[in-house]
Every structure is written in C-alpha cells, then in structure tokens.
Image (cartoon, rainbow, N blue to C red; front, top):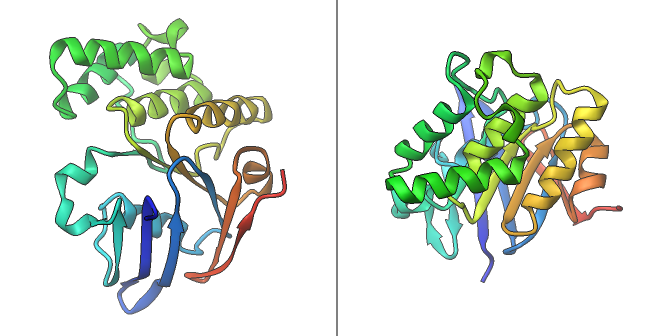
Length: 219
C-alpha cells in the first residue's frame, strides 16, 4: 500500500481549473520533487494534501485512510512549510517554537524535548533567543522548518522552501532537507530544476494543473 495516494484530485476557483485530475502514489521514505512553472497548480495540490483546501473531485489518502475522514489525526502526521512561511516577527525563536508546540498539544516535557530536537536538526542554536524579525531569510526558513517538524510528522510538505534565498542559503537548506528526508517522507515543490536534482530521488512534473511526467530524478 502506498503511503500517500492522490486519485483524480481536482480543484477549481471561480470556474478556473487549478488542478485537473491529478493521480499519483508516494511510498514511505521517498523525497519527491513537485516541479512546474509558477501557476501550474503545485501550491494548490499541496494545500489539498495538508487539508487547507478540500478537493472538488477525487480523493487523497494517507496510509489508506481518506484524509477527509481522518481529520485531525491525519493533520498530526503532516508537517507543512507554506510558500510564504508565516512567522511572528516580534517573537523570539524560542517563544515561537514553544507556541507551535502548544498548538500541537504537546505536553510540557514532550514539548521541551521536541523543541530541542527540532532546533538541533535545523541548526538554530545560535539564534534560539533572537527575535524572528531580526533573522536572515535563511534562518527564517530554518525556523519554519523547525516548526514543521516539531511534532515529528511522518509526511513533510515543503512549498518552495528555497524561494528568495541567496545561493549559499539555498545550498544550506537543500542539505537540511536531505537530512530531514532520512527520517520521513518529503514532498518538495519548486519551479527550479536544480532543487530537485540535488535533493530528490523522484520527480513529478505538473503543468496547467495536470500531471505530465513521473520518474526518477537524475542526480
């Protein structure tokens, strides 16, 4: 049984087709690149996987259980870094991660351990007590990644995680994603081919809302 299954998934906005009958299967432990031009339907598909949107047609399943039926239990198994990486700039990194842990309903001891693990995994030790608003774009992305993995999700969904970063920051985030992918399934969207070549073992290409190719990435 595939870990994540999309079966004929479609989504429209004001009569315009954003995603058109997308079907694919992702096995546990894969790092999958979701590649396509801006406006191709990548973000909309990811938002349906994370239950931000409901599909107009088709179904999405996690470990064979439809997401619509699994509800909150499914959300506990998914970590999500949105394209715009919304953060509270006035908070310290430590405060923000503790806040996310409380939203995830982690108990005090479990939350402290989870924050320590996420900070170590994303290399945030040097900025842990700094305001998020003072961080570089690279460290803000790391903070978003730490929040996304805080509850130890089985599936990590990353929407354009290196967008707006300089070349050195891109390399750092790529390396981090590879490390995170050793312990969980990762779905990574981008419109930049080198991102998937350096990070992903499999590539899905979407164009005008339709899945047009599915194969191994040439690394």
